[in-house]
Amino acid sequence: MKIIKTTHPKGQIINNKEGEYMSKKNFEKMYLWVEKYRPHDIDNMVLPDNYRKIFKDFIDKKEVPHLLLHGPAGSGKTAMSRILIKCIINDNMDILSLNGSSSTGIDIVRTQIEDFLKTPTFGSGKIKIVFIDEFDYMSQAAQAALRNIMETFHENGRFILTCNYLSKVLDPLQSRCQSFEFKKVSKEYIEDFCNKILEAEKIKFDKISLNKIITTFYPDIRKIVNTLQSRCESGVLQIKGEDIESKEKLFRSFITELLLGVNDNKNDIINKSITRMLKFLGDNNDIDYRSLYQDLFTDSNIPIWAKITINKYSNTHMGSMIPEMHIMAMIYSIVKIGKELRDLRK
Image 1: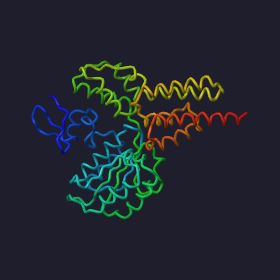
Image 2 (image 1 turned 45 degrees about the vertical axis):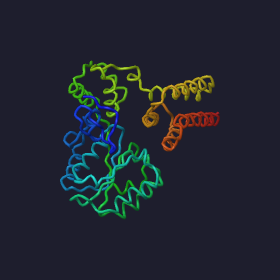
Image 3 (image 1 turned 180 degrees about the vertical axis):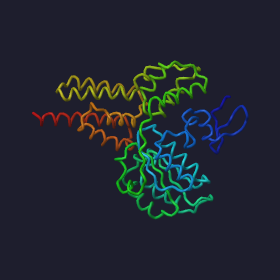
Image 4 (image 1 turned 60 degrees about the horizontal axis):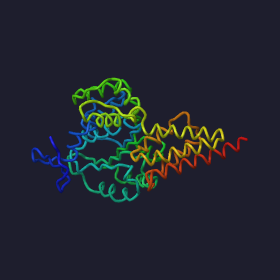
């Protein structure tokens, strides 16, 4: 089936063969594996027994408190949120979905969110839900403004928030939500999940290639599935160099090398590492910076003083005009602070 590039004025994608219109959401479900094979009911979610019982109770009662789901990328937070929303809300007009990485400012709270909650429910349910994915990217001013919104509209407004870093969510908001931690899914589960996808799509593959992709991008299931689909265009799984070592992990190795140069006071190593980073950033414009910051922050080889600087730049990354310059500013800050600390130890 061939899909032509033009779209209907209402944003629907034209199916060239059958002459019908398809919503963007349905198009994604049909053609994007990450959507097509996303769990669509609670029985298919990997959850602790106590979480499953609590979430099923929410669904049975058609009611939910403010929720804060936190954990690493690809651990099921968004999938679980969508399942709850689908089972609790009867009318799509009672749902407001936002992404914190793009809707970061306080104006979003004062206009979209508040205006949405001011109107009565459209469906037969008694609540409206505001779903904010990647909530840890929202500014502190926007988060602070949400406190009053939650209290003002507590009778009919509920919030479901997801984040990777719980520490970036203000304490007053954490106290207003029931928090659930989503942990890494086992590699065995991911391997079985990917096997089923490849078999369903009739893709020829070998386990060694599949395991290399899983190892590189673990525990992010979403990234693993997206990588698999991009490597199966000819009906055969064919991996590339970056599937063995991701760009994010390669850049992290440059930073580790840089820190060794700082620690040993070897300017030649520092300059060489910075030159390699600049060239790498110039050659690659598709780096997943969020994943990079997370990898850096969890790397046991990076000292705590450097992680403090990494966290600072991670918090302001989404507001930067040129991401490559922002991360290089972080690198120069790490070098400066590292040299100052080394001199203090003398």
